[in-house]
Amino acid sequence: MAAERVKAIIERAREEGRKKLLEHESYDVLREYGLPVPKAGLATTEDEAVKLAESIGYPIVAKIVSPDIVHKSDVGGVKVGLKDADAVREGFRAIMKNVKEKAPSAKVTGVLIQEMVPEGLEVIVGSTRDPTFGPVLMFGLGGIFVEVLKDVSFRIAPVTRYDAETMLTEIKAAKILEGYRGAPPRDKAALADIIVKLSKFMEEQELVTDVDLNPIMAFEEGKGAKIADARVLIKA
Ligand code: ADP
Ligand code: MG
Image (tube, rainbow, N blue to C red; front, top):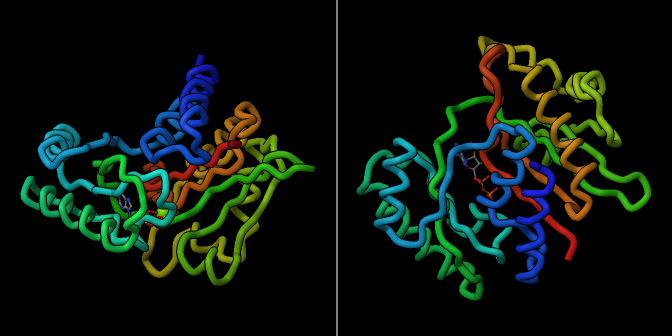
């Protein structure tokens, strides 16, 4: 059962004393609940990185995987748009060098080689477990909309399909989802689906304290959405 497989992954992380799933583990647990995660694999050497890139298909994204690093781009730990084997090798080395310089005490598990998600509107779906209300789901647009304007909507779980669709309309910048200045309308059904599935995940997985899907690329209507970065925090 999906719920049991997820619990096993979480239990293993806790046994290692971790309060955070590694990025590939996050995708493994979210995939079990039908969330749209990118293809990805963990490489510990340059050769492995190239092998993975070739099986996923170029272009790819390379990211540092470390239990001690939360914001990967802050330490030069993310390289996007790597187009061939040489670029993957160079990216792998650059990430290792940057992390050694900027986070010298961080334990490095490896480098995640991930499908490059096509460009879309960047949105965020998150959840935190409130001690009183239980899981609370959050939706917003990426970048300055969340970070500067705090333009987000919330619901307490369980979030129904109708609730999720309403959440999409409640942010101040909701019009951007409808298309503007030549940009297409976005696949709101796919976004509502992500919110509902994350709500179910939070309800069933009581050891998960926080989930941050940031960014999710929202494609045009009918084309879906895909998660490009996922953080899952668990109870110690
Ligand atoms: P962090 O949030 O830890 O700094 P991310 O994994 O979110 O790192 O990567 C930083 C940025 O790189 C993202 O906000 C996104 O714009 C871009 N990015 C990351 N992964 C992908 C991907 N698989 N496809 C396309 N763009 C990506
Ligand atoms: Mg991110």
